[in-house]
Image 1 (tube, rainbow, N blue to C red):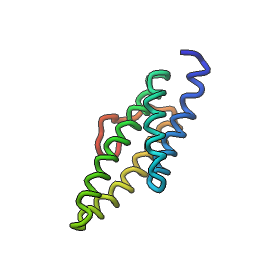
Image 2: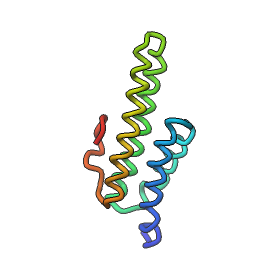
Image 3: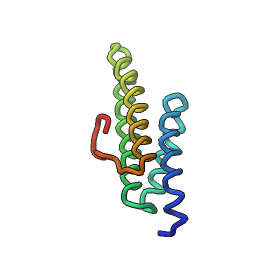
Length: 115
C-alpha cells in the first residue's frame, strides 16, 4: 500500500459517510456509497478498514430496515420503522464520522444498533 493510498483513504471514508446521510433524501447515493466502500476497503490501513466494514453493514442493515418498513407501511408499523431507520442511519453515520475524524477505529463493527 502506498503512502498516497493511505492519505486518500480517510477523505474517501468521509465522503462515504456523507453519501449515506444524503441517501436519506436521495436514495441512489446509498448505492454509490456501498460501491465505494466495497472498492476501497482492501486498500487502506486496518483502522480505516473498520470504517469501510461499518459503512457496508450500515447499508445492508439499513436496506433491511427500509424493506421491513415498506412492507408494513399499510398497517402503520412501517411508518415507525422508516422513521426509526432515518434517525438510526443519521446517528450511526455521525458517530462513525466522529471516530474517523479522531483517527479511531469503529468501536463495534458488528453492531446492529448504533456503535
